[in-house]
Image (tube, rainbow, N blue to C red; front, side):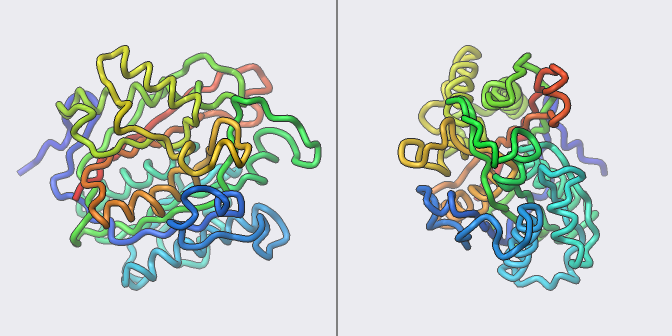
Length: 337
């Protein structure tokens, strides 16, 4: 018998909810100073972590975060069927270099800063479809390596406009399994590419807000749910500016999300005391906030139904210099007890 999992235009209900067995999060020194520091498994003292380059440091963060999550799960690495992971570096080398010694089948993913939720929806699909029993989902970013690749060398000391965001140094990892006691991934809504015409690489929140709104509204319409269905709705890294835009866009479509919505980029830093302008960004932002903070809130039953919407800006260092606009993407995953 064939079960049709698709509902509406672009959402999917899993026939067998997928268990999130364990998570782990390692973050950098800036994040250590932020309001969520107590929820992370480890906070680094510096951006190098004993390595010779920022890129090598990010690979080490990925490696140790994955090892920690697997260790917490109690599952032998030989029993992990797939590893789904990605990052912001060219060719996703933070993930591939960090995981090259795992001896686990690796599928590299790229969705810019939406990569972590992308890995969750791909990983849960593999398990629900009986292609896997246990999988790893991971994503990372690093402030210094991202700034060097996408904006300017840090040595130049360029001033950052108020709309700019601070790339999170950190990684998050979740181990998904066929069996367990929850929390469970129950449904997801893959996003469509939405281009708002924004060309400013220092205004990512505005560039991604349209994609977040499109996925959010699609999820509600497809599933028949409304914002009150969830205890909390989190976007990945819209920051303060993008968060306000999304609230306005959702309101214009008849959805009031003010009471139970927040953004991981807003939560991870203290805007007033840390001078992070519009907030946090990067693959590691939603990955570390979910794997550290949100997962613990679910375990403690302070949240029972959560919608995670990871947002990404689909650009590279060349496209913006050539005057291209910055398309956005947003993927949503529903996690419930």
